[in-house]
Structure formats: structure tokens, C-alpha cells
Image (cartoon, rainbow, N blue to C red):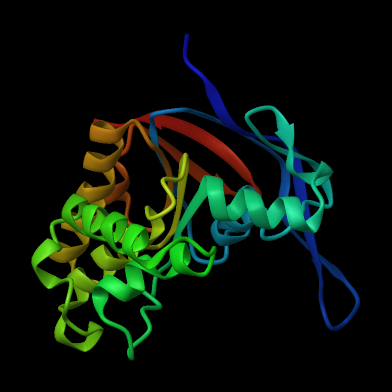
Length: 231
């Protein structure tokens, strides 16, 4: 039986503008994500894709409705529990790689493990394994500036995997890359899901890349209006 790993139920999110009016970004939004699948969310700039991803990752909370991870309402968690949830269960990838320039690739990937007080040897062994997953095992001792744009983003993906997350949330991970490199990075997400059974939700404005996902949702007017199968 397929496991439902993530669900948004009648989610609404509003932002107050300087003139005190309200902008409704998400309205009555519903989303169901099964474990072991790759889901892509497309939509125009400003449609609320990043806002949705922040809610799914517990970085923000909805004004109404619920976001549930394995049937547990994120709104019921304390700040400490949310931090633990994000660190242990989620891997985040953003449009910019956010690698620390003064650290090697290996140190960057291992960093989330090191700050949670795991031993250096264990953290580095795991980082090497994650670098191998993304095809960067021979770049471990390089500095970020020595990598290509695509390699930096692959290093960021390796870092997101360091704590063996159940769910990867990626916000425009190919937005700063050329088409060919972006396509390769998007394929990497698909391969990781297929090989490891992880789950990924990827926000993108690139509909051609989105079609590589198992399911494609389109976000318009605050709602997911369509759900299309991938390839």
C-alpha cells in the first residue's frame, strides 16, 4: 500500500501589504504526495510556489488549513520539534547553492552533520557517500569556486541528503543554470528518487523539466488547478 508522506489540506496564506490590504497567495489549496515519488509544481512568477514550499517545510505556517507530514500536523509542533523535523526529515535545495566559500566541498556537505554534534569521521564518511550519489566524489577536496555552476548545485543536493531525509524540497534548483546543465540536475533528482525511494517536491517555472517528474501540479490563482502525470 502506498504511503501518503505529505499533505496540505485547505491551506490559505495571506500577506498584509503596506496599504493594509491583504494579498491572498494560497486559497483552499490541497496537495497529496505519496512516498517514493517526485512531484513538480509549476506556475508563473509570483504565483505562490515558494510560499507553498515554505509551508510544506515548516518554515512558515498557514493562516488556515493544515500541512501534515505522515499524518502529523506541523502546526501542532513546538519550535524545537519543528527544528528537529526539518533537520532530520527534510532536505532543502534552493536556487542558489549557498556553499560556504571558505570550506571545501566535503566540509560543506558534512556541515549539517557536524553542527548536530556527530563525530567528524562519521560526518565525513557520510559526506563522501553523498558526494558519490551525485557524481562528485572526485571533487571532495576542491573549493566551491573551483566547481562549475552545475557541480555547485549538485554539491548542494549532496548536502541536502547528509541526514538521510525522507523528503527533499527544492525551490527552483535549476533557476541559475543554463538549459543543458539544468536538465541534468533535474534528472539527478529523478534518479535519486528512483534509486533510493526518497520523495521530492520540486518547484520550477520550467515546464519541460517538470515533465520529468512523476506528477506535475500547476499553481494558479492560489490553487493547484491541475495534476498531470509525468513521463
